[in-house]
Length: 217
Image (cartoon, rainbow, N blue to C red; front, side, top):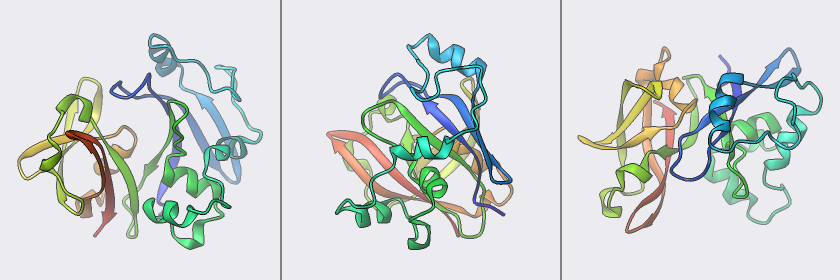
């Protein structure tokens, strides 16, 4: 089984705001398309969403240079810190030239906009990916509550904003949620073999950002 299916374009107004899954990248038989998800776009517009610059037409199905355009968000391979970057995102050396894989596993995240690309992962035997904990701006947890290397647990729940929500706990203490799209893997067959560990923490009195390593046992 492939480790992920479709890739989804996520947008949010800013830190602390809900994510809107506004588009989908489909890769089938060596053909790649990108299109917007109309109902999600309409909701996002109420918070100021505008289309991705290279894909301005909300009604069009794009077929040309989709991966090439989105791969412009990736870190340049000639950078001196590329090794640390790949290690952080758990990218094996065999995948360093695979643009689709890199987009999926790094979220193609850049600090200059509010977009991310999120993979719909499958709980395959060797699955290992990094995600960041959602909801910290609401829970406002003291920074001493969590340490790198902590093993966490999860619970599937349904809430108004997400029918496939996944809560993340340390012991009985609710930390936050797995972000949208990444949470889907916890609802698939084999999810009982998934583990969550704290990979990295950014803090300033409270937990500002927490990166989690999700892997199959």
